[in-house]
Length: 211
Image 1 (tube, rainbow, N blue to C red):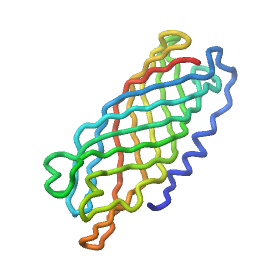
Image 2: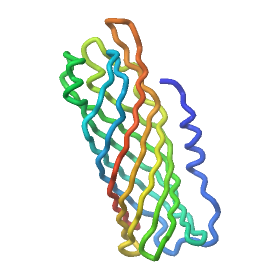
Image 3: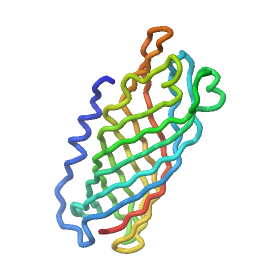
């Protein structure tokens, strides 16, 4: 897998602007998320496009609020993300030797989160992050096909709204765009190596607890 400029985002995600005041609430929090995702169509190693069925994603993050500047609130997070999806049945005919149509991705990311507090109980948020992850296409690792390199840098963007049930409990609804570096798949029959891009669009529900 080639090196990617995605790694440069990692350093930026660890830097937050100075805030005029510290957060009066619990600075540390634990957040859990679950959602549904659609994976991008890829150019498969057999030369044809491959589509995927609707998949799911789960995440867990440990974060710390850094402070506030007016209506803005800043936080940093360390997050683990797992996604799972399957190859569309119509495209499985291109892989007659496959026994598993599933695919999954796992990653660890560092995020910078910015909340805009519309009111005392409602906020809009933006977040960006980068880290390291891997992706496993079972369909592309069977018969004459083998994954040669399936790990590398990853990045993501998140946006949504957050409702505060109290000083220690929040619920959120948001969108996540997640992208990985290319993976390499080798075809023993042709001797060719195909580089495959992967990205995911996820709609997710999140729950946050102050700790």
